[in-house]
Length: 232
Image 1 (cartoon, helix red, strand yellow):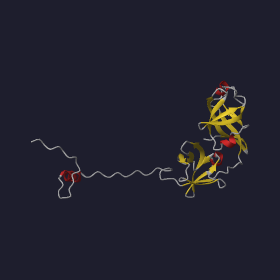
Image 2: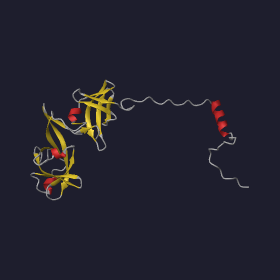
Image 3: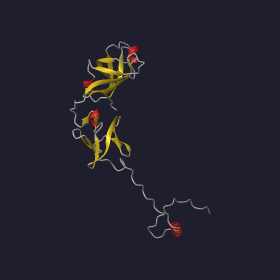
Image 4: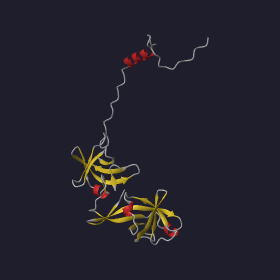
């Protein structure tokens, strides 16, 4: 799920149904078939309950290819999620599932009740608006550690937009729009800063002479480092 104040992939199944990627099995934990998890969901309490069934994304050579996996229990060890699954009795079986991606069926009509949060499929395809003018289309979301990153396709190419409220000021799913207030240079190249012209030779000479002339007066300050006194 994406939040503007915080890459889930989608697999279409039918007109009103798709699949959400909710986790990845990383490595075996202990000797009793437990497997450490990397979560791709903001709602593990709902997605990872005993009895949840996941479609597996594994290589075609894997013995798990074409199979599903049922969760028996989800535990937390030192802040990390660890799953126990039906039919995975020992470490050997758990190791055979390392790097498997977990998918769940998802109803496209489902909406989150979390404020300022949306499922990725709700955002992909939205018209990106700036000052009332369409400047591009939302094509993809990357969920990074620091913040989500939106991919916006424009006439001049792809632009990556941090999904923060300071830049994405409004999301209107019903209107099909996402409004941005980007900083200068995010969607366009800024004009190059004009370089100051070099002084004319005579002016340069005059400037040099002035710089070499000793300062005078009670308020004069030498900006050059002090030199050691000469030997007698």
